[in-house]
Image: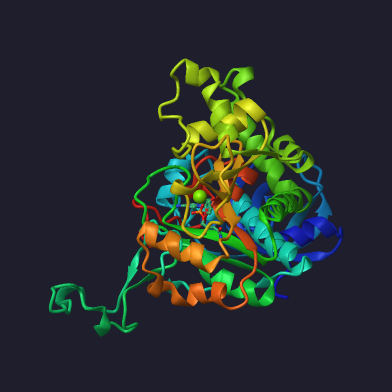
Length: 483
Ligand code: 4AD
Ligand code: MG
């Protein structure tokens, strides 16, 4: 459908055929004997080279052919005499769709820093690095749907506007139709949300999990895949205010089944990228190697493809939170007081601790389970306390990845109505406000589990990028939301 794309022309390499190529100019080079125009249409990392004889393109038109301009080139596909490409287009005609004044077009052919490219988020998809990332992002999204579809899961669309705070962390963006300059007040002076379109206080979803549980209690295995929002003011390389999350939720799955699914799923999508995005991954691998040239040999990371293959081919380590604390307290950085944050049973692990476990101790992905109840969400299934645990734990699981830290958070869910209500009271959630959620425990309750994979964190790992703003087309962070 539509014009034939460069990817197809290059793969078919139908020498002798006439082709019409539409794309943006990456470079133009003029020599005594020929004019070379490298065109890219985003269908592949590879450019196609159009070659014209000197004088063949009139002077006026030639001046308009600059980096960033958009062309329609007609010509014959021939074997290339130059190195670097198997075929090229011997130009017979050219039309300039749109010019890009070299004095103002920011993407001139030179190396641009990722910081600079973040400032021109509207144009950066035209660079090799970002188009490669966007194609990989697409392939991973496709692999997610394929994996769940092939494994008997149904894609459930959960709401973006909701009245609940699934994580109970209070990091929500409010949604209201009220005029902020004329907020209606109740007699007590509070904002009167009854006047709102929704008739109550609503927010953008932080997670589709709670509605996902409703789906799992009917369809057995569901997954969500959509945008989620967190109004956390954390300006880190791992947090976005708007990110995409994949949340499978399964009836009749215990924590062990949940871990097996998480590991199998992540390996599947990474393998899918290895098998289907070889050109883009090779490009990114070379880019990383270039970047690391200045580092001493022993500080350089594994080549990207090797790192991905390692994760796919090796079992993840599985340990409990209690075991992790034990390892950390016996570790060198702990003894030498090198950790910035406290390590003690009961405190939440910080990224420095997670990274020690994954990168230094086990040197592979780790699934941490059975966290202290006090630092996890109200909906997690409570464990019987064992003798070696100083306090109550829940059946939580976090999957930690090298270079990233937490990539997945999940748990078995508390299916017992009374225990859940008691827990809600303890953490200050009004059970009435979640009556619909509680009814899953009242009518035909069942053991069930689920987890959430942060899609951008997965893409960070697969592409080898280090800043989460560089793996989503239009990042929303406290500092960047211009459009
Ligand atoms: O650990 P979290 O907060 O878990 C949940 O939301 C559960 N309701 C999931 C579930 O059990 N269905 O978030 C899950 C994952 C994290 O492990 C992380 O990868 C990602 O979502 N994540 C973020 N990614 C980017 N920016 C943020 N601000 C993120 N917050 C969480
Ligand atoms: Mg988490």
